Image (tube, rainbow, N blue to C red; front, side, top):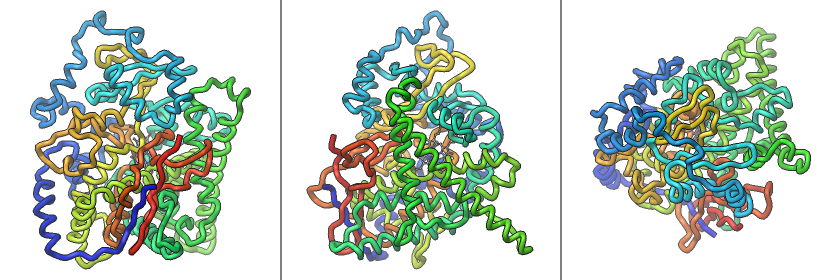
Length: 590
Ligand code: HEM
């Protein structure tokens, strides 16, 4: 069992100076274009990218594409020196069509082998490893079929770039057929995750105004800090309640933290996930997300008729969604009722929360419900997984932890609660989170479907409507792009000499359909990590085993479980406050 402990730390000014020598100078000199554009300055109010692109990023013409799409072909781009030539050579745009290969010529496992690997060898929990194995065995592109779905895997940054550059005005992520089937069957609307075409574009533009603009997102720091304060208190309380001072199962606190954080942004009210006594409905919501993600793969890949023969996967998938929609609707209706009462009393009603804004856009309530449900869902595992992995790696790298703590303390001086402007001045914090997401991308494989035309990718013609799986885990763990790829080395993001291919690690996706919650997520994680580090040391138990990632649609810490749908939260990472030993999870037993 891997064990971790946190203890309150005291720091001195002299170590701050050391830290500055070590990290600050180089971080200010970075020339990594991705880092310049998105990373270091992403929370900075004076971010030039934001000045330039922030407002216009809501336009239908994606400024990112203008910026990177065109200029990435420019030979004066620093990363082009290193990666450009190779990535452009993988597809010669002038190659005559007759010399291009078809899917029939693409390598890949037989359907029987793919099914065997997925289900008999439990590859569905190790889809990320299957990406790496696929790359090694078949090269950067291979195909695999299961049930009604044929998918082309793309595992090379230059090729991923080619796919994304051809994604069109309203990109389609994937059919997510079972997610859509559920909505059709139950008469629900689509949210941002599932909507397509103009329907998606309309909501994306509306929500973008509130979720992509740095100034608007920065204003959520007070709301998020209130949740972070409760997380810190909860960890302290849990530690005091444990005879050994442990906080076992810390991942469950991070799940609740994620849900509380996104709820506070969506509803501007608290739902009690971090209270000493947790409302049962919040844990049920989290469990529903888990079950839904576990059941996504079987319900997508198995043909519809199979639902009649073996209804269990579909039934638990459906029940999970039912509960998630019910939970979101309950909270939205409650908030709207509170406002109606206020109006009736002649009081002014105004709000900065997202649901308030959405209900005033004229969108049908069905669309508001589905969007809020999907935003709630998107804000839980993403945050909790990133927090768990960040603490895990920091505990195993005390020197990085110490440097990061010193960075936080040097920015904060005598203040206790950091704001958005503070975390914007923490380059190592950003590098740590980037490195965590490189090693453990929450969404290890993304997808695109180009519906209206065949496209050229590498030496292949990929027919329209083919599901293209973008193997982000494989690219971000590839030694060609990240030397010593399995090592946690945040300084690789700070060192100006190491330009990374801009598509080699893209944990939030790229372009028009990229993560709309990115800025909120980053702010939330930075604020939480800052406060945790200001209050606790994170220590591993010597002799504890390493925790590996596993896929459950998303990439999460590997856990001990005995049956599908078991309580996922048992034995996940834990922390412990001063003095004693804490527990950070168990190895996955299969
Ligand atoms: C560390 C945290 C997170 C990571 C790594 C992450 C990653 C991603 C990725 C890879 C995508 C797909 C992008 C694409 O297809 O190109 C995505 C989409 C999305 N994410 Fe996140 N996400 C995170 C947090 C959040 C949070 C907190 C929210 C909600 C506030 C959120 C809401 C969404 C939504 C709604 C979409 C769909 C966007 C669209 O289709 O237009 N995400 N995210």
